Length: 430
Ligand code: S3P
Image 1: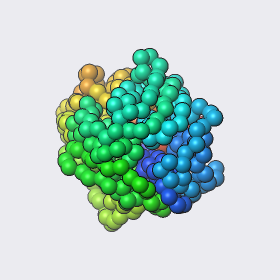
Image 2 (image 1 turned 45 degrees about the vertical axis):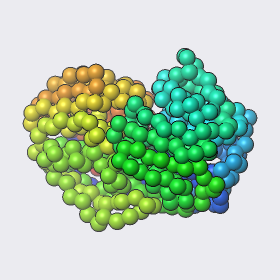
Image 3 (image 1 turned 30 degrees about the horizontal axis):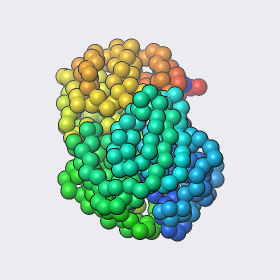
Image 4 (image 1 turned 135 degrees about the vertical axis):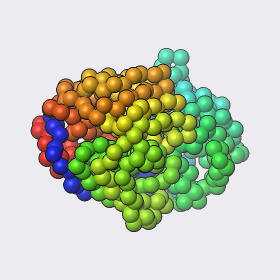
């Protein structure tokens, strides 16, 4: 897709539903008692991967093509069937890692795989703790990457010190903990997103949070939880950064989830001096939600590190872009997790923004950008990584001359992205 910078932006965007919450709504209701209706579920390739795997495990998921309402008939904690097929998780790390946690509690043999990106992403981080709990797991390359074979069974509760702040790792262990013989505790270096804790508590699980530690106790049953999924702050992020960096812009974003474990980008942009207004704070599906207005801003460089990193992990590529339009230097560190996302996002950000003329340097655990206030359009390859595809498109909307984004994969999380960009900037061509 080709894109050029518009002179002026005045737009309102209905942000798509949250991806993390949509996955969890399907997965947790699959093992609940009763039927759940999930309204405003995210219809994206990743969430469809979760639905497909659950159906293969015998869970009725009624979710017609193009629909934003899914009905899940819960099978109870022990009601999954052994799948005849390999479970294909597509591009979705959340699907694979959370399913492994869930399957650890079932005495079934399952084989999980995914696309070439997912087959190269680290799985030892969930395999090690789930084995410690008692599941039998084998995987390729010394039990580190998919395809993964799992046979679950009787589990014991553990205390696990996770070396990474990862909600996927935490969630896999907590799900397995529902099936263990005693309490299971996961402690993270700093807090990752807490959608699992919120939803499991709402479904009646015994779960407690103590700073960076979460403990779950074995469950007899989960109650089905019908819900409405709030808007995804990670899909609002491209519009926030576009509006803050463009010289004549105002963008309103409706119904954005502002769960404090997810709002790192808002804090970062505010520290950079961005003009951001939060309106109509309310609650949707057990999560805080607000409307957000972002206007053209004079930005200054900032440093992002430590506990801020997991709170903005999927938005850090866009922080690099904001850094290109800020005065001074923007530094992102402690973010080596970016190297094991759908692509190596440190390398991708540095190469793409570098080709567009940014003064950006790669570090082992992040990058440093010196703001120049300008980029020039060119052809960029997004490597089949949806977040990098959106980064390229937004960079193109701020650059001099035309940008051509190839292999963007935006449908993984945001099917209508190009359509929305077309209406925001009016300068998109196929
Ligand atoms: C997710 C957690 C994050 C995030 C991913 C979705 C989730 O990954 O990057 O896009 O839904 O739990 P990690 O938990 O592995 O950091």
